[in-house]
Length: 348
Ligand SMILES: [Zn+2]
Ligand SMILES: [Zn+2]
Image (cartoon, rainbow, N blue to C red):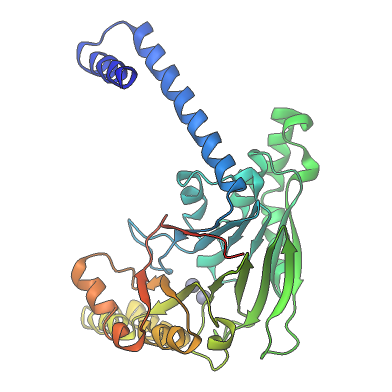
């Protein structure tokens, strides 16, 4: 307590009186030391935790705003750290959330829309700079090789500069860049297991985001807990099966009435381009009520709306966005927020 008070007094003196620079320097030194110590301790705790941890890193859609970036989720369990999708703003939120970037195990992609892949190069760089000890493994549906190759090409110069500057010892070129792993789904009725490390298992399943093909979702299991990420999709017959019994079901949802309202008003304001785009996006997503109905059918415990279109912020917009969902689902519905964390204690 005395230590904190001393720091506050020193900070005030620095700010108001412009006291000696030496005293300001010592304050800054102790702040840097505190922050680094805390961040290292937090990262170690996340990696050694018994809990399955889920961190929402971007809950908007292509229409992000001041409080919603899009799109990405971190899953940390058993010392494995998986990132699912990495759209604009996700790497910033990963750093602000203090996640152990250098310990990343893999990136899983649901599809190749820009709001899900924009920061692949940045994620590759940032996790390499923070000590990743191999190339970044990227899993995704067919086409992932082309996307990964493109980002690798775009970041090749940057990577070579970093190694030249910091030396092979600290920025080894062999660990820079990404490696693509293509996931194939022979039977659209079945989820395909493809990842099993330190008790964290993942399977991939097909969804319907036409004309975006293929598009997939992921089901994670760790010590009796289940987390399912829908990816971008319309309501399908198979989704309740893939989400069956999930403790957390992270689902996309676009409120069609709200988006059509934007479309109509844009048209009235002589903005036909925006009007047409808004009109078009309504046909390849599900509504919040669709998501709630799937959650009900699948018997999930918590439904988290994690890809929120439009990116509602104020109280009235949130109420309109969620209209009807309570009637469709008996469990808890959470309107996702960027950097929200969920912890699941082990069941076995
Ligand atoms: Zn999307
Ligand atoms: Zn999409």
